[in-house]
Image (cartoon, rainbow, N blue to C red):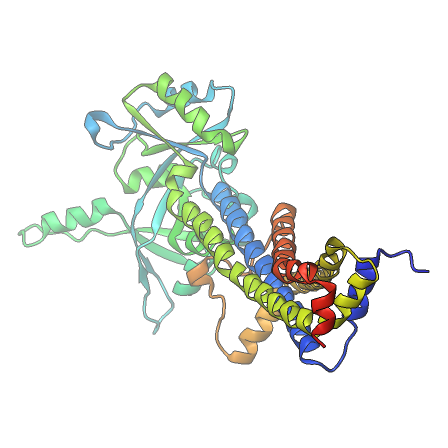
Length: 428
């Protein structure tokens, strides 16, 4: 005697592969559930990976909090930044504070003879070499050369270096906004003089793993940036690193009370709110859209069970004549739906995990085979396809898919349970 419940034993017997239309629909239902679960796990894990990696890149390259002067409701420089930095550093949640000068500049390369110079307009970031390393991952992200900002030294991003064909040791000219302004003022005058740019040496090339940061920013010392922007001993902002970056909103409120209305405090979440919120919305939308794949599979289960109940009407009548209850008959068909759901969910889970494990290898193969980038870093910002398998998301996907499969068999099961023995036997 089998130890399995009567309903489950009969459901397994009915699900044995046979060359019938019902068995084909059952197989399609299992495949549909598997594909739906796999696609959901892959997409949601990739979206979670995007969100996690983007936050890590932002927190590694940018400060957790930025403080700047707002005298007269206009953003201005900060001449007494040392005093303000000490006030900020007194907060128990603050790990370090560093001054920064940041703005657009015009860069021109100095190529060898018979080569055309390249021009670009990156964002110059002037940092204090003594404290800048505590608010950025740049010193640990050097791909070529070293993080050396002494003298006229700069470090540049890997994509910026590739676009301008630069290497460590090359030289480039930097025109500051002040230089360009002076040239405009002197244009057409009798004593017009050419404004010569400052020459800098590329000491290193960094790669922080995010396309935008690698292509838009060049970094030099605070003193060089102050000279380029003619700031004297002033700075544009103070960058603050916290012990816990996710306490930025709380620390912002504390600093606003301490510093007063003269200063504006921005958190990293506010500075990047557009893209972070977009990722959250996109993840939720993708979940709801792709869940329709599972719903289609559930409709296949409904169709198969209705057909199956019709085919097994005589057997249902015999079972009832032998004493089977309505609940037991309904349980047989609900068990079938449950078995299909379990098989589909398990197959989908395995397929999804397998695809996530080898996602980048498959991506590189497709890039090579098709001849173009399926996941261009210039658009998405990442050189590899990120993914994080969140147990809660996987449990939600698998659990909800299984429930949908069960619900797909409820109506046929109720209909089968309500059949009367005499009518069911007369059917044949």
